[in-house]
Image (cartoon, rainbow, N blue to C red; front, top):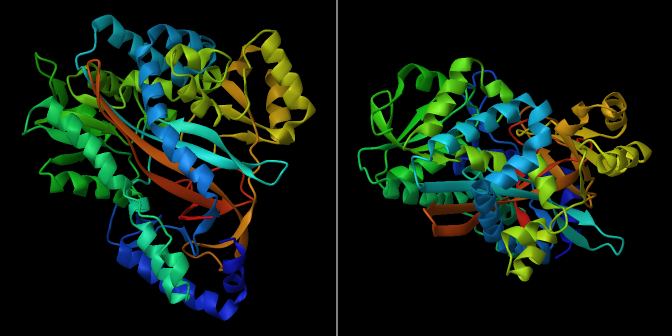
Length: 476
């Protein structure tokens, strides 16, 4: 089914208006919810999380490719996190100029010196892709980044398939509605957390969600909590401040927060410099890392998700080091890489600078930051690199080929926004989970997907950043 068959629907203004009103109600019925911006820490007033009126077309081949490579990405992240020399080498230039990465790295070094307290490792990650338009008009899957900490929207994206099915049915498109895929990342993420909790081995101990000060997106996390409670696994939500005030380690390094033993620390915070508002926050992070609790992610897995590591992995021969006798795995992963270029000092970095200044519209300049809205585009690239081209400041960034997806038309439903047709670009995320105990990988799964769509006039930013909206793939 091509985009064409939804095109007639999109042109029927009266029907669109009717569908949009109904769709907002259905989103509330399905639990596709967010707190409102005015009162982000109260559930007294909530609204629908922003979403597309229709699902967006995604070629079946590239969608299946993204799912198929995910367990290999899980393995790769886990191998990197255990390779001390690789992390040291990859991040050497970055930690010289990027204070945030340097602070994380110092915690990593301290843990190595003391020895890890816990042999169980839990990874919940999301690999994000866009579809690059080739000259022959086909699409190829290109990775934007891999999120190894606080990867969001596994909860809400478990609720959107039924929403789009219903919209299509009401619009008289039964056949398309039946082709919306099931998607249950919340259950899959919870399954991995439950495994880690079980391996920790104390029924009284809790799973602690370390959450942000502002919690608009609480329902996304509540779905995972709910899945854990179904398994009789207790959860608690704490901020950095709570850990600073009530956190302690006993003589066996067991972590207690507010008097409760913590089996798993699930970081939904701690991925941006502004999350650490004081030195006490850094002390709390170190205490959690030193503890016996299973960390999701632990500090080395957090570092494995940096942009610099992503760029180093794209160098010839590097993937082979992690998968020495698996050329087909190397090929599967490498096929998803976009062009990535170093800005380290030296001839290679100089070449990258010259290339970016010559044609800035072909590239994206990326700092070592998570959370959306940080990337630099177009003439702004020249502005940054002109100022930093001859000094080490440039090594805080990497350069990446700009991916050019085919725009499709859709309506973006967002509170208080006018109902109008937009040219849209989509980003596909794939959720991966793994649990390792010592040397044994006890679980390694791909647990679902996330499609986020934004107007093509926005170059950067996700749903939580207020730019993208939730979507579903309609495979073509």
